[in-house]
Length: 193
Image (cartoon, rainbow, N blue to C red; front, side):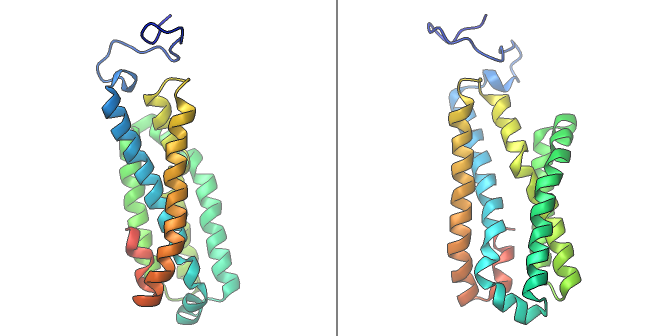
């Protein structure tokens, strides 16, 4: 069994001799990658929460009722929960990096669209697109953490990802209101794009 240094900790999974195995990366490279994953989660969570402070203004400007705005948001979160299953299998098939890049592109397109929404149909469709894009940060990040760290390290490393996600939510709610008050609500969504 593979052990960590002189300790009694058994390394699970066992590292390979391959230089491209993330388990064998240097400590600084793993921490840097973990920082990028937390930043990705922070940005996506920020984007999910920036518009909340401006809903009544958005409703008046776009003609979308608050009930339909709530419905669009529900579609976003429904797809966020369902599509992550698809992104997991895609990430296992084509790799983590293409999924991260492609979902970032999807979220950028959805963000620009949401900043230009007029009407209920566009609100529903743009929120659906955003839900498909943001769903990757709910599952693929964990796969990446599991690739880089051993079983005894994963809990602590996942806490960094969760910190980034929660930080994005808090900053999104605070800054979304400020941006909406000073620049207008249409600048809130593309902010993270």
